[in-house]
Every structure is written in structure tokens, then in C-alpha cells.
Amino acid sequence: MGGNTKGALHALTAFAIFSAHDTVVKFLGGTYSPFQIIFFTALFSFPIITMMLMGSTTKGNLLPVHPWWTAARTCATVVTGISAFYAFSTLPLTQVYAIIFAAPLLITVLAIPILGETVRLRRWIAVLVGLTGVVIVLRPGTAELSLGHLAALAAACGSAFASIIVRKIGSDERSVVLLLYPLAANCILMAFALPFVYRPMPLTDMAGAAGIALLGLLAASFVISAYRNGEAAIVAPMQYSQIIWATLFGALLFDEFPDGPTILGAAIVIASGVYIVLRESRSGQSANTPVLRTRTRFGVTTTPRLNTIFDRRTPND
Image 1 (spheres, rainbow, N blue to C red):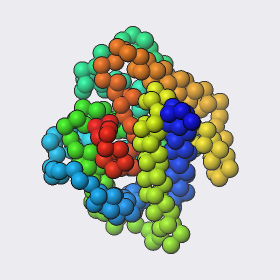
Image 2 (spheres, rainbow, N blue to C red):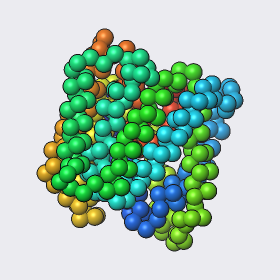
Image 3 (cartoon, rainbow, N blue to C red):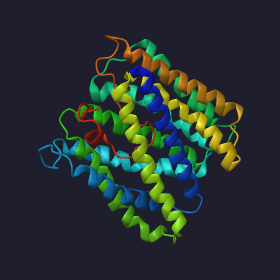
Image 4 (cartoon, rainbow, N blue to C red):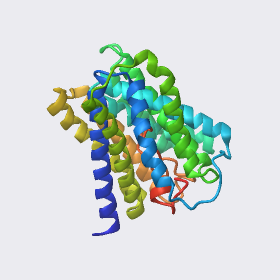
């Protein structure tokens, strides 16, 4: 089996697991606040991450080299997690994905002021076309926009901002710092919110929260393996396979069926995102390749970055 084939298969597996992760989030979101779900998910992630990091031989401390950028990324990650979990709880899965798939488009735009990237006409057109797809999904004026739609947009923006910061400071910052600070922030901040939103969780629901943590970590390991084996231009577009799983899980488990505008808008957003990925992969088209070099899932950044654990050869991506 060739490297690209193996990379693509591992990526498809990763994003299928991520879709199952989001489905469990949606199940729990019907009963519990996103603050409570994120708190227990982060809490269950800590022992696993700690055990993995105990085997690290990398020297250094946990003080960030770029404290303000690290703080900004941590805030963006927290906002993204809350927004995404709320969106999954209140909207059909396909609608959420169609909106958060706009993150690569936003990364392209943010790369201009933050990375000094030059975006030429064709990629600008792709960005505008993709954002048109988001508007088609939202249908302002013809369909009622809810807080869930705004949350999905916030998740896309927060994910793009967090990803572009990693691209900016990743060469200087230890991956363990980029991993632990958002995880700790989620635990601490959600703990403050928990007394106001807490509802007792039976053992099955607590197991669901643990399942979210395990599924996220498992999927992240497959993403790292995919990039280790295949070219980024092959692996990155595989994220869009989540729309297939969202449609399947939504129909089977939640009686959700995407309507025409959602399908059309999602297709436009996906086509634009794939074009940008392919455009960046061409030599000389992008100095920083901010989308291709973002090796985590777009849209939802509550899953820790595991590069420091699974792939020490690519600590900065």
C-alpha cells in the first residue's frame, strides 16, 4: 500500500471517528450544558495526556515563548469548544459541518495580516465563493437564524484564529505548551461555570463524556499517522468526508435530513476549501501554506494537539 493511500485511509478513519465524537456530543447536548460536557471531557483527557507525556524526553519548561499569542490561542480554543459543542447540540449535524468547514477559507484571510501571506486573485475568488456557500446554508431573510448558527460561525472563526496562531509561533513554541494550556483552561474555566449549569449525570452519560475524550484522542492519533504517511494535499481534503457521516448519523439517530440549500451550500464550501488546499500545494503559490500546515481538525479544537506525543518529527504543525 502506497504512502498516500495509507495516509488517505488513516485520515478517513480519523474523520469518521471525529464524526462519532460529535454525535456523542449531540446526544449529551440534548440534556447538559456545553460547559458541563467540556469540563468532564477535558477532565477525562488529563490522565491520558499526562501518562503519554511522562515518556517525553524533550528538555525545557512549560513557560510559553510567546505568552500573548499563546493566551490568544487558548482563548480562541475555549470559545471554539463552547461554540462548537452548543452548535452540535442545537443544529443538524450537516448544517454545523457546512458552516465550520469555512475555517480553511478564514485561515486564508487571516494569513494576510498575521503571517504576511500574499493571497492572489484565484484564492480570493475561492474564499468569496466559499463564504457564499455559508450564506446559502444560513439563508438570512428566508430562514430563522438561531443562536446555534451564530455559535457554528464563532466556532469556524475561533478555529481559524487558533490554527493561524499555531502556524505563526509553532516553530518557537513547544508542542506540549500548545497542548496543555488550552486543556487546563478548559478545565479551570468550565469548573467555574459548572455550579451554575450542573445537572447530575448517570453513569451512562458520564461514560459518554469519557467516550468523547477517548474518541477525540484516538481520532487525533489517526490524523497524525495520516500526515506521517501521506502528502498534506492528499490528507487535508479527507476532512470533508465528515459531511457523509453527518448525513448518515443525522438520518439514523436524530431523524435529520439535509435540505436543498444545506446540500448546495455545503458543496460550495467544500469545493472552495479543496481548491485552496490544492492551490497551496502547488510550488510557489503560497509562502506559508497556512491551511496545509494546520494538522488538526478544522472547526473543533477541543481535542488536544498530539504532535508532541505521536510525531516528534513535525512538532510545529
